[in-house]
Image 1 (cartoon, rainbow, N blue to C red):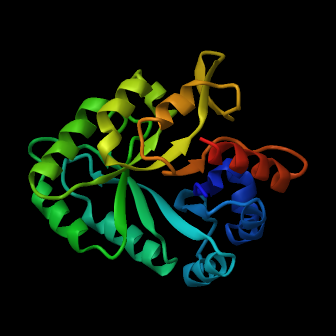
Image 2: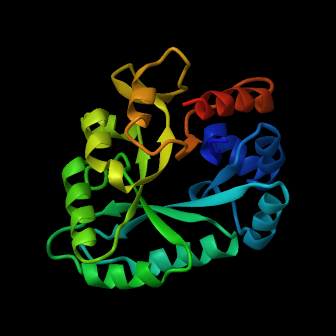
Length: 247
């Protein structure tokens, strides 16, 4: 079966901060998902991460740990302190991946320090295209990934099919260009409303997202990262898990 995860953020920041990630685990498992993407930015106070990881495993799920951190800070340096913190937390929860964004990478950045770090890291680091100018444009990401490969390390990518729109990047071009690096796909639609971009659910009649998925290996891990709303959240989750699993 194609593994479909649910990003905790799909349930809305207010709900997740109020009830906590642990309260989502049973619902996500019952909806047929393969895993839960933990969102560090939605923590409300100290977390018992080993207990959360154990609960996720007890329900037959796996975890991806998403931290709102950048590999390279505003000064262009590898931000080891923050990545160390996120790596420790990802390890505590037993995550399969640690997901972060690129940040302010340039030719002057110390790539070798980063590569030595990720090569020995206990949890695989995946780079995600975010919505920022520094981390959501195609050219810096391609340059970074190519340099990593040239230095003997193949960096895996979380490909967010919607985030490209925030930087005016054609998702089809991005998918064709980055396909060899993609390990995990964030799924969401994007709509223009009142002069702003907004994430919206994918639907069966949409054609763009299945076309993008065709560039990636069959059965690639993917996550619901669009709003899940309704009086019966488990039923809504189950519907979209089933939809994403078909492509």
